[in-house]
Length: 99
Image 1 (tube, rainbow, N blue to C red):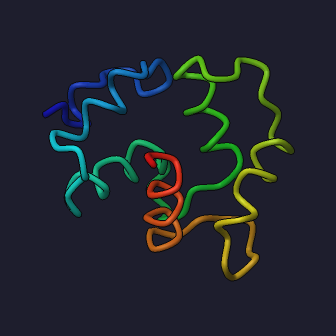
Image 2: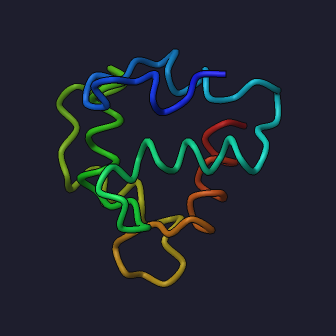
């Protein structure tokens, strides 16, 4: 399994870094926590639009993804409408993204 320490420069993540966090078809709770840490670089306990933008761009999924586009991506998972995804909302986010 790839750990967070294996990603020396978290701003240059590759798709294999994120996918490599999951050993099994269905990720374990610990693997989801590790993935959350990749998104939550400032370790404030939340994933915001800027955090999501960094990961999307690093994975090469959408190089010119704007913060506003990332806010729109977050909205369906942001149950309390605070503009951020907490860990529990992130679990739902990952379930939708991996399925």
